[in-house]
Length: 450
Image 1 (tube, helix red, strand yellow):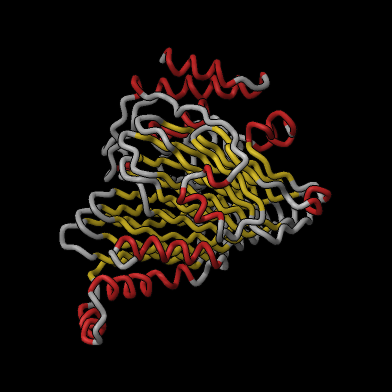
Image 2 (image 1 turned 90 degrees about the vertical axis):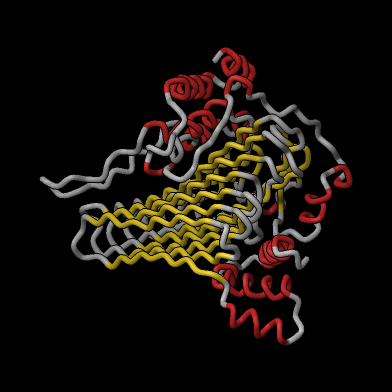
């Protein structure tokens, strides 16, 4: 597409990056949009007119937080983040600096565009290494003579190819070996122009025995015909600990498509939380590749779909090494005429003995008009493992609701209490006080109890 070629030419950057972008755009041009015929997209259809897709307008840096959107101002007043970036569309409009002590230890926290200029060696080493332009081939390594899982349909990489080619900015975090960052780092992304798209990229690298928490939040007003396309690459080296939190609260009219993937090495730990509350259509992929012996992945998520929202979550726990552990807990709420989709897979390679993997999906239905599709799956090619998966879907406990109503609690507040209680076993595993309070506030708004 000529228009995308022009945008690529305007992106600039070093020769190696331009080559990567060009490869990604060429791939994008060869792929179709995934349809219902593709198993991983069976219940979700994205209608997008690429010919008329235009990038979000550029924004200038501001020095006064009073000029930020009210929702961002409110979050910054109570955020857990010790340092943060604020993006409006493609540009950083506000930032705070790392404490000098962390900078002295070699910690880097900046926007990705600046990182390409100032830390090219580190960015080139890791960029596209976890989330390439094409969909990763996560075919299970199976025993000779058996049939492994099918490779992903190439069209599943359509949007990741676009994000790889035309990303404008995002966050870059680098924590050197043995350094522990106590306070979380964060990015707040907003969009302010309807009928546009943004393509962003987050790259977090925790070197050997490092530790860091990164909070990634997205928020906007109502923006009809707007697209947020992104990729998140999480590199967790031997013995490192990384906690990644994503909170999506886009306004009505936004289509959100994001692939998040962690590469977890020996004795490393990745804790992830995906929160989906906003937008009209949201497709989030969260994948953990347990590369090393003793790797550990905790994958948490919660979502609340209301009105006509359509939320699709695709997960993958890929055990490629022995003695690794993964635990997935996804809990969702559907009300009104919303649609919820969960498709989760545990894959265990041939030599990944002593795998310990769990997958649990629970959905609470607040309306008989809402729909939910849940597809938990296992593919095991080792013979000494402990794996389980399950899914349940059900309505609000009417006896519990009656009990609360009989105590004089109005219906909206009673439902909010029951929904919060339902989601509590996810929230209780998140050691970030302001994040939990923010999520509880969104839940209250959803049920009209704010």
